[in-house]
Amino acid sequence: MKKISKLILALCFISGFFNTSCTKDSGNTPAITRSSLLGTWLENDSGKKGTYEVIFQADTSATGILIVNFGGCGQNMKAIAYLSGSTLALNTNELLGNGWIINGSGTVTGSTLINWPYSLHDGATLTNFQATFTKK
Image 1 (cartoon, one colour):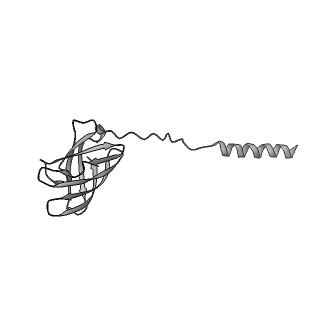
Image 2: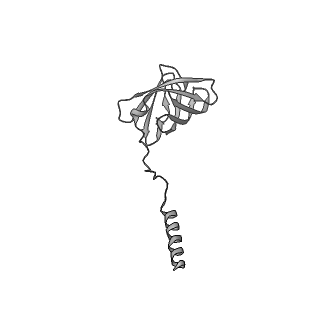
Image 3: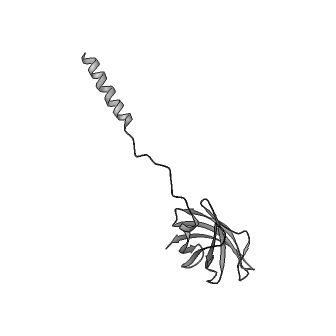
């Protein structure tokens, strides 16, 4: 009888151990939307001195975002990028108003951080940058 009691006690203990669990992760991360990205961002590029402000504005298309001062090209320069999932991609070989051509796509993390490698061709030199955008 003592053996059976000890066996039942051991089984209860083991059963209790396996029935405990951590908090379930729902797996639902908030979707990245264009509206969550609109506003003022700080851009920091490798190879450039300082950090500067860029503004994300809604474009006329459903997923388009106008980016004012992308790459520090100036307040009158607007690049356009399109959101698809967690990727924000510039138009291929986008020509900015000053004759500069930019290319690249960034990876959005949450709605406050974008890691964005891109290239900028100013008509004479092609330069590659690694930008980090942080929402203000």
